[in-house]
Image (cartoon, rainbow over all chains, first blue to last red; front, side, top):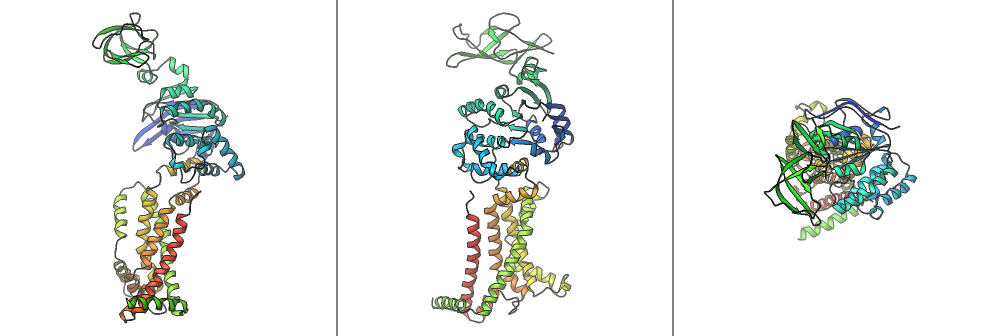
Length: 313
Length: 231
């Protein structure tokens, strides 16, 4: 079993603690999304598991064995967010990766062909890697990590920087690719949709600290606090002494319980439906309308109610 | 114009005629400047790498010093080396003054800043995350350095060419610390000076052409190596 576990791991950079994880494990065979805002320490977490950064204290284990400075590298495959290539063709880049993992030359061509077809980069194998489009480069970057078939695959923002259509395609392909080439996967993202579409488990990281961890459903259903709730897409509204977290899409026009007063600021035509932007107290609220109902005008106030909600303390 | 033509004719005659003294001067020049370039690479490439990648106090000042070193007149370097190696100097006991070793030392000091500067520029032109990528893929330190050097090949070979080109063509330092002793420390450039001062212009010109030819052949080889395509 290739569980990944972190115990009391802290990483300091320039005198500042960027990661402080008391205990966290990633179960063998699962895909976990490490999700959080920019600068939360997500990339640092991956680098520590890959053995690239040495924690100032604590231990990281893969399958029970401690990650040293280079031992970890052999059991992990890391796709960096920046698509870094050596000069030469895509094939040369994939070949170097396999060569560095001591895959015999006779085996490499077959492995490269298989991963290239699966990742949709078979046609660019002989093109210079540094001249690829961002979308192609992102796929090659992914292919290089996957072809290693490492026990632990680490993906840093695998869908960043590519246009919407390419992203949609890759988002559709990724689960199948991970099932074929990866065992345990840890992927870092700041995008909620990516996290939910790709992972079974979620780890929410804010300011270097784990704020929530568990299965998607468990993490989503019980947001621990306001920050986590907002990251998960909840609208957090003041309610009596504390806050109510309203799940995405659960807010609607009309009275009910609980209900709030919305000051409408803008009405946006989204093509197939209207969209309201306004404020409840000083919280910005975004409301998708079904269409067909009478539209309020900017400046008006309306009652809105939540179909479901979670009470935050 | 007539002198130029006579120079060409003389050069062909000297080279073709298998002039023993000329050939020994050519070989000596190649050995001294080639050796100094090699030593400058051994010292300069790691230094250039450290300057490009290191994050330490005074790095920028050091880079500026290196860049200044790239432009120091060879004769000044020769003078300083002479002051150290001369009989009464601090290193006089080594008995190196007016030897080929003294010339190698002076040329090494001239070429090293060039190699450091070119290497630093070449390494800084690489993607900054490349070392991390290689480490993540499991490359050991030596293997990673080898791959990085291959990636920086263009710049590194430019460093060799700049270093060799600078010292094979300089005359001040070689004259000062070598003494232009016939059969011992006379190289192409100092021989040119000697022949010119004697008024042997065709011979001086011929030696100049030989020097150019030597430089061209070395650079041709290095350029072929540099421009070879990576598959």
